[in-house]
Image (cartoon, rainbow, N blue to C red; front, side):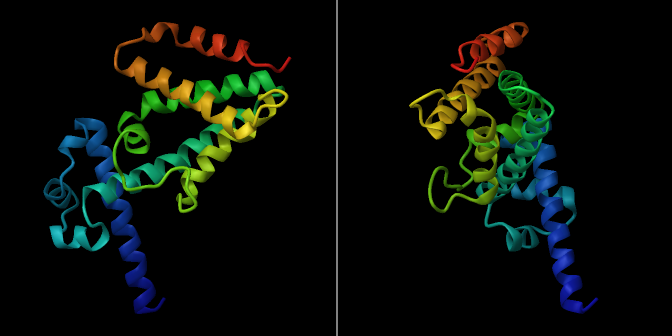
Length: 192
């Protein structure tokens, strides 16, 4: 391995460490606790080293969001692929999405609540975000119904899931009724 390859590998390892540490700190104490000073202390590198990877907290949030989008897409695809009919697939997708949001609140916030400097629904949207939407579209496009644009249907269904996740987490909806809400949503699909 050349010196340059080793340095690139070390740089990539440091970047992963910064993102993992930010994510861990945010999950434990919230995003307000994530500062470059605290991250530098935790990873045992100087703040200038941290800034050589990320210009600030906003870019770190964006990196966590991209990582989360990749994880969510993988989880949604795995759940959907285990189902054998469209309705079961959509139910599995909804449960997986809501479970991901519940188990990873700081990551979910990075993805959808905080400013990570990422463009959504634009030509320059990062690939992990496009892929996360594609993972939803793969299952939801089939159940959109006649004369309904699959992408628009996916956006509306996603908005419903996001609302359920956000309102439940905020204590506005009782968590014990989550499964009933998922069934109500799925039962209203136009697919038989």
